[in-house]
Image (cartoon, rainbow, N blue to C red; front, side, top):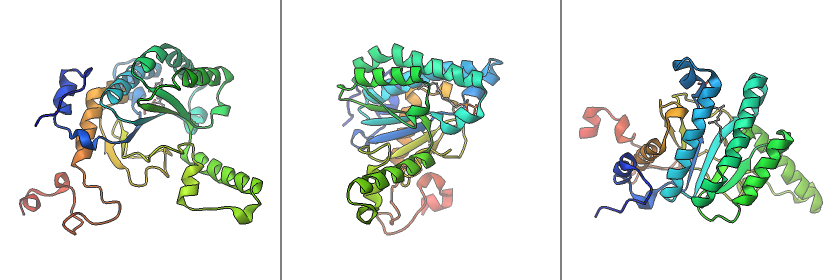
Length: 276
Ligand code: FPP
């Protein structure tokens, strides 16, 4: 039986949605938004025009994710390295864009029942940005649908350093280092993402094959989907296509497939192998 399409999807999105198994929608999707600069360059526009259009992609992707009932979406908006290695004018523009987004989108986030959350070294961001972030997360804190996490001034290695510092501080308050519990669960519990399930799927736009210091601990068993689409061209329909590809994967977590073999995914087999 064909499942029903959630209200709010457009025609193209509905077509892809009908090919999905609604029972196997990823619980957490993480996205490395890349290619804003190239999008602008191809149009002979300044780099910031790509970032501006990238906001429309964020809006559409979040709306579609909320619509189809994805519980968690994490977007890599600004890395610690971006902050250090980009011209001040571009960094300042991104900060203004973010503040504008946080103000302008509250209404839509509320309407779509989206709760906003942040990860990264927030205290190193300009105070005006921190204030907007606090207001936006407070304004959406009662929402019960999609948890949208924006990674801002984020670095996975810094997150792991901060987790170990936090573990050591907790131990020193609790009888000293002899009482420090170090195992996978305790480390996860001290990451910025504590309480969130690890992403089932990580998407990277613009064709680059790198994780770029994003959620290195949490992505250990995530399926990776790389699309050539540049972030400003990414919309809800591309999100649904990535889920369609994800649902074709055979997740083994280091084990064997159901037939006891470690076969490659059908799309990676030769024609002759696929026929066997
Ligand atoms: C990567 O493209 C993108 C960024 C560093 C910034 C991402 C920001 C946005 C999508 C807009 C603002 C976000 C929010 C949440 C409001 P790039 O500049 O590295 O592209 P390039 O590799 O083609 O140069």
